[in-house]
Image: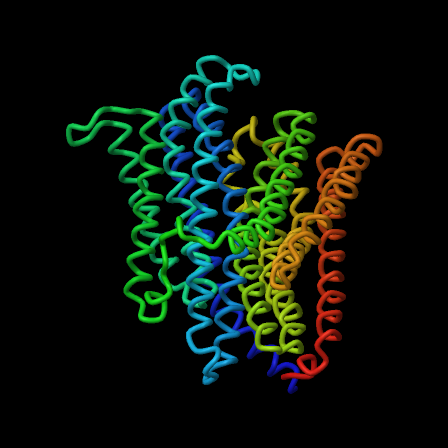
Length: 472
């Protein structure tokens, strides 16, 4: 009974941080969905060109976000150390200085990544035809990439400030700003596409201009919110040109493996999509539909992962190793509840779940719908391991162990998952269903290895500091 009460208490503490983060992630999905819908309105060629531009932008954005993701953990640990040392004359003001230095370094890393990514985006756009793309599609993609490029900088600035607010456990403004950005983005898309109010009619490029504008407005809104917060305002330090070089190197050392992990995961799922496409258009459509379902649930996993990661950093800084050990079980229990409920919906209401993607009355869609329906049972199990491996990466990040997370995901994704998917799909004749069983095996392997590594690393840390290990 006492264990259940502890689990409920820990779950509430985790949810206080995880829920706004998960909802923010879902709102960001709505942002990109709005762009895609607007592209579709402009025609097939615009959708192809815009989709190509977004693939490039999202890949660079995701890896840039990875570079600053560890900032939240570092801020949480610094704030907790300051809290633990409260009252000590030597520690007076030191914690605040540490947090300010981290914010300054985070802005420096975001600026470097944003500028480098923007240049790469333009160069990739210029080389699109050399990569085998249709000339007309490549030309339109160039214009959109040029419009998106300036938006990467405020996008990563936003992420740096976001990690600061999450590390301080004050993420409430994130959700409001992200939801508002969806509406603003839709309005600006319409204005810039059609040239409303005397503005030039930019077509597809207008979507890029709107997206860049929204990233800038979102950054300014989050910055303004932080400056009005009495706990956050004194710690904001945006003069990134004064960042401490050692702190910048430390953030890059922690962030580079995270960026590589994000890129590796994206590549893993991209390759499996190519496998699915080899079985025909219906198989690829089914793969895309169920992959999108997982992507939506994955945003909840991201919220749990970030919250667990921040809480681990905080508990370790306070010397609460027992609490840090409980966080793993709490996060996994919350993930199991969410994925089980969603899995039941998949199995009980498959037609309703897949209705946004297929028209049951269309002969052209019927085969894809049948394949996707058959995949839902596999996906119901797979999504738990997808959630668990994401939580595992976050837990290790809380230990400042980002390199192990990267190495393990390489093993799970590429050495186990991809060969298993190929074997089950092709030689054993499982086709799309075999492909998804291979994905399940890869994600399950990754989850088990990550969680095992966390347990061993936490035990080693506790053994190295015996007096802290018995705290709490």
